[in-house]
Amino acid sequence: MLRRGCACLFVLLSLAAANAKDGASQKNTTLPITTSSVLARKYFDRAMRRFEDYRLTEALPDFREATHADPRFAQAYIMIAKISKDPAEQASARAHAKKLASGVSAGEQLLIRWLAGAQEDDYLPAIAAMNDLLAQYPDDCHLAFLAGDWLTLQARYEQAAVILQHALTLRPDYPAALNDIGYTYAYSGDFEKAFAAMERYAALEPDEPNPRDSYGELLRMDGKFDAALDQYRMSVRIDPNFGSEVGIADTYALMGRKEDAREEYARAIVFAGSQSDKIDYELQSAITWIRESNRKQAGKSLDQAARHAHLAGLGRLEAEAHLVAAMDEPDSAVALKHLETAERALAEHEISASDRTEEHARIVRVQASRLAEAGDAASAAKAVDELAAMAAKSRSRTVQLCYHGAAGELLVTQGKFADAIPHLEEGNDDPLAMRLLWRAYSSTGASQQAQELATKLARYNVPTVEQALVVPQFRASLVSQAGQP
Image (cartoon, rainbow, N blue to C red):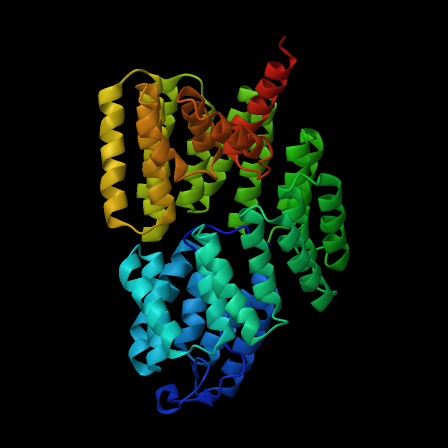
C-alpha cells in the first residue's frame, strides 16, 4: 500500500538503537532514540513495528501513549505529526517536536528539521537536513529506506531505487524496502522487477495484509485486474480491518464495474480508520459517477463529500472535492466558481503549509486550463506566471508539475507545439499532460514518440480523477481511429 500524498514522508527508524536519556553522548551506527522512560520506549518500538507493516491506525495510538509516558519524547511527537490525518493534531505534535529538539541528539534534531520542514513547505533546509542525516548514519538501513521512500513520493523513481537498493544491501530481507522498491520499479514501467520484489515481500511476511495489498496495486497498474483482485482478497482474508476493500473498489472502477466499485467503497467507508479516510473514499466513489458521465449524481456526491470535509475541519479534502467538480464541469464559468470555493476551503481551515501550497498549485493549474479553454489567454497566462513563481521557490514535485502542465497547455492552445513539448515531458506520468504531449508530438511529426506515448496512456491504470477524465475517452478514440479505412 502506497496511497500517500506527495508531501508525506514516512519514517522507519532503528528499533535497535540504545535507550538513552542523552542520545548525543553515544556513538551509534543507527539513529538514537532519546527517551528516559522504559514504558515510552516500549510503546514507541511497538508503534514502529506496526508502522513498518503499514498498520498506521494501530501505530498512531501507540505513538500517543509514548508521549503520555514521556512528554519530552520528541521523536514520538514528530511521528504523530507525520501519521496523523487530523491537521490540528499534526500541527500540535510538530510544534512539540520542534520545541523539544534542543534536548535530543544531533541526529534527531536533523530528523525533526527534515520532517517538520517538509510539512512547513520549507524544502531546501529540510533536504539539507536529510542529506546530513544520511551522511551521519550511512549504515542505518532504516534511514536509507526513509530517503528512498521520500524520493518515491516525489516521483524520483530512479534515484529512489538506488537508495532503496542500498537499504537492501544493508539488510537483504528488509520488508519495507522491498515494498517501496517494488513501487519504484512499477512506476518506471519495469513490472517484472516490481513483481519479483513483491513476491519476496509476501514470502517474508505471509501473515501480514500489506504485501498482498501492495502486490494487488502493482498488478492493477499493469492492467492485470483479475490477478489484482485475487491479491486484494487475500489481504482482506488475512485482516478484514486493514482496508483492502478500497483496493478492490479502485480495481472495479478501472474495470468499468462502477456499481460494484460503489458497493465496495461504501463498505470501506463503514470500517475506515479515520474521518479523513472516510471522506477520501467518498471522493473516490464520486469519481465513479464521472466515469459514467453522470454529472448530476457526481455533483451530488462531491457536494456531500465537501460538506463532510468542512464539518470535520479537513480543508484539503474539502478543496479537493470542489477541484474535482471543477475538472468535470463543462461550463468554464461554473468551473471557475468551484475553484474559488476550493480556495476558500483552504483559507478557512488549519492545514500544513506544504498541503496548502500543493493544493493551491493544483487549483491554479486547473484554473489556467479552464481560462485557456474559455479563450481568456491573458488571465490564463497570469495563472501560469503565478505557478512559475511558486515553482521558483518550492522544491515540491507537485508544484513543479502543476507549473509545467499549465505552461505546456497554454502553449498548446496557442499552437506552439514545439515549445510546449519540454514542459509537458516533465509531467509524463499525468494523464492530462500526457494527452497534451501526445497531441504536441503528433502535430510536430514526432510519430514514434506519439505512438509510444499513446500506448503508455492507454495502459494507465491509476484510479485518479485525471485517469477517469482522460484515459477511457482516449482508448475509445484509438479504437475508432483503428477502425477507420
